[in-house]
Length: 110
Image 1 (tube, rainbow, N blue to C red):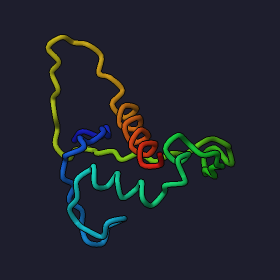
Image 2 (cartoon, one colour):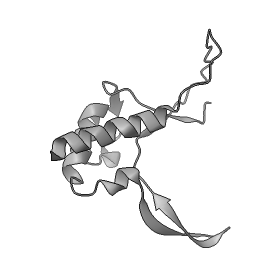
Image 3 (spheres, rainbow, N blue to C red):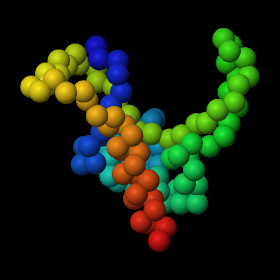
Image 4 (cartoon, rainbow, N blue to C red):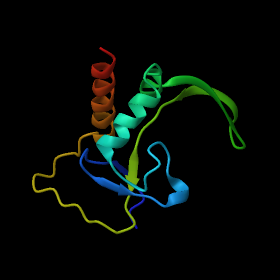
């Protein structure tokens, strides 16, 4: 089982159980719809996508300061073998997704 989370494509459809519905109240939604709903919910909270100052209380590390941010990630239940023909390093897709969400937020505020 692949345990690494990866960003989803904007037109991907996500299905969740009724008990796990979050913003839209629907069990199926496009990633782009989720992003739009998140934008509407936190229009004035743009720092959530960049990171907000916080303190974390951990049994292992005690109390420590840092930042927390919002991201939508996916972890496949199926083992996937990804072959890259050119053997180039994989770009940081999660950073790309966050940048895209950030741009959508900025455009909706203007």
